[in-house]
Length: 176
Image 1: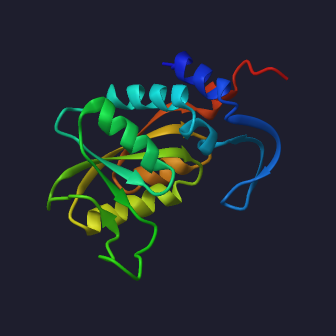
Image 2 (image 1 turned 90 degrees about the horizontal axis):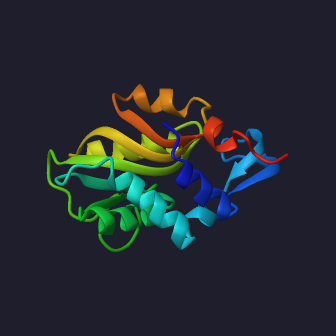
Image 3 (image 1 turned 30 degrees about the vertical axis):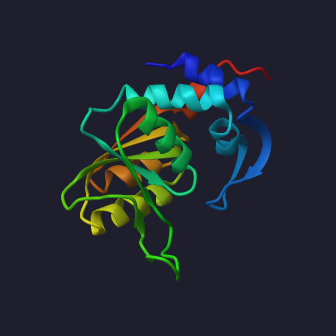
């Protein structure tokens, strides 16, 4: 089911651009979904948080993939009234040196949030870090699935990935 309100909010934030773009995977694309534009736009962030909250249970804990998942988890945490933790990409050499920030109990069920999934590498790394820290991870919610193999990579870890929108939906009926 297409979430047209969310698509409209992403488009209104100018979060979808067309041209030639290099992706973090090194591949090139004719379009780019700028997570920082939709994550820093109040209307888009609110739409994402509301949509994510609709997919949660009241006892869920959120897991944020750093950096892009953090504002999504913070907004969704407030919207849904559930806690969240942050999965760092790497340990810091100072402070606590934690890879997972926030309160996480052994066996706690965590729903991981991510912005845009292309290959799924960042999301898979976060899932592994959360599991290594004792979390149970069976679900991931993402804003946009670019439909370039990320879902398959995530599902190979035994995690069900739900996307609020797919690239096909986001790019449908776009103005040329």
